[in-house]
Length: 282
Image (spheres, rainbow, N blue to C red):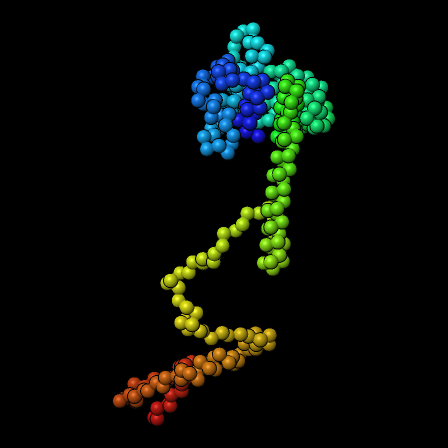
């Protein structure tokens, strides 16, 4: 719930004019102009609508407390909070109009909203307390409606209920249209309240420097069977891959010339790479 909404409801309930609203802000410790107040009191869909900040609205609530209960004995103006929520606003309204828990429950009952006493007391507890509960918008809205019913003997509860019924009807139509759209697209189960995804093909980045798979030469793969591992450890065993390599690349023949002096020839070594030399004749 916006601060401007609560501001409008208080103004209409107590028939405050623009000058009185400016006076309440001044009592709370902030100076505003009539032009600002007029823009704050406009509807949310008005193009000239201006949002009232939490601190500005806190000054107004402090001025409302001083207007209804009188200033403090020491004359000090309460400090305005930088951030507000429904619990703080409800507490300030309770202080301003000197309401007890039962009085608030009566206001809610006049607005056709039933709330338990334990639930109401949870709104005024310390936020760190385990039984603390956040006050929802409907609680604060119905308190303002009950306050208007008590002060002016009129209420906008029925009009508000009709407005909410219209909004719910529109939301249900949109949900039904999305459900029907999902059925036509293939019957996939989708969330009717989800936002529509933007249409268009998905763009995937491709590296222009990356070579195509067809251009890259294929390398032969060597695979061993279960029994090949034990055979390869035996001496003299040659795998198919080695046989193919030997067939493809034959060993080069080594040509040697006989020495001019037979005495200079030396006997061949025991391990000469697989070649044998003829012994010279004596």
